[in-house]
Image 1: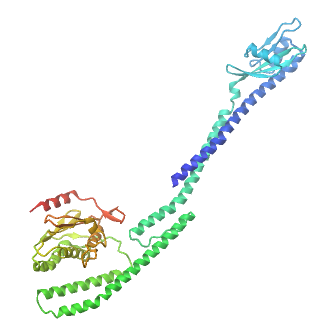
Image 2 (image 1 turned 90 degrees about the vertical axis):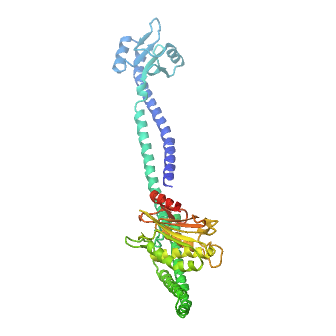
Length: 467
C-alpha cells in the first residue's frame, strides 16, 4: 500500500509538471526570440533618420559605426536620378529577399547561416525604398532559454521529490496501524491473549482495531468460561471416583485388586491435574527451562510395567527397547504419561487380543524419537486419524488421544507421524526436539516443524531394519 501510494503520487506529479513546464518552456523560448528581434528593430530604427536625410556613403558609414552594429548591420540603397546604388556592411540575406522587402514595403525576417536577419524598409527623400539588414545570431535568439529550462527541470524534480516524501509519510501513517494489527493477530494466534491494537490511524483501520480488540476480549472470555466449565465437569467426577476408590479398597489382595486401586489413584491424580490446570487463568506459552522435563526412558518403563499386566492377560507379546539409559526430554512427565497411555490404550482398544506391540526410544543429539507400533490391521486414513475430534468411530472414542500426542510433540518443535510398522500394523512416531530452537510455522493451525537431523534419521532407519 505504501509503495503503491508513492507510485501514484510520482505519476500524478510528473504529469502535472510536464503539463505546466513544457508550455512554459516554449513561452520562454518565444519570449527570447521576440526580445532578440525587438533589439534588431531598434537598431534598424536608429539608422532610419539618417537615411531620410542623406544617402552619402561616408556619412552613412559613420552613422552605422556610431550605432556599434557595423558587423551585424547592412544598408542597401537603390540607384536613383543617376546616382549609383549603395551597399554598406556585410550582406547576409539574398538579393531576392531584399527585393521582396523593398517591393512590399514591410519588415520581414529570413533565415541565414548562423541565425536570422531582419529586413527593415526605410523611405528615402527621393521616394525610393532602402532596406536596412540587421543580423540576429542564433545565440541571441536562445539566450537564457537553456537556463530557464534548467530552472524548470529543477523545480519539477523538487516537486516530484516533495510529493514522494509526502506520499511516503502518508503511506507510513496508513501502513503502521495495519502492521500493528498483523503483529497483534500473530501474537494472539501464538497464545498471547494480552495482545491488543492501539486504536489510531485512518478511520477504517481504527474500526478494524476496535473490532480486533473486541474479538480478543471475547476470546479471553470464552477461554475463561471453557476453563471454568472443564474445572466444574472434572470436579463432578470426584464423587464417582470416591465410590470407585472405596469399592477398590474392598477387593482384598491380589494383582487385579492392586491394579484396580492403582488405576483409580491415577485417575484421581489426573482429575486433580485437570482441575488445577483449568483454574489457572494464565495460558501456558513459555517454553520449559533448562533442567526441566522428565526422563523418557523411566516413564516408558513405568507405563509398560502398568500395561504389561493387561497385555499378559490378553496374550500379547510386548517389546521395549532403548530404555536402558536415561533419556532427558523437555516435556512434563504428566504430558508424556498421558500421551503414552493414549497410544497404548488405542492398541488395546482397536486391536484383537493376542496382537503384539512394541515401544522403542531412539535418543539423538538434538531429538528423541518415541515409537509405538503394533501388529494390528493398521490405520487406513492417517490424516483423518490425526484430525482433532474425529476419533475412530467406535464407542468410547473421543478422538482426542492422537491430538494430545501431537500437541506434546509440537510444543518442542517436533511432530507426529503415522505409518506402517515393521510388525505389520500401525506405527506412531513421536519426534521430540531437544535443542530448544524457535520452531518454524507451517499450516493454518500454527503447528511447527523442525529440520530433521540426518544422523538421527539414519540411525533410526537402520534400527528399524534390524530383526
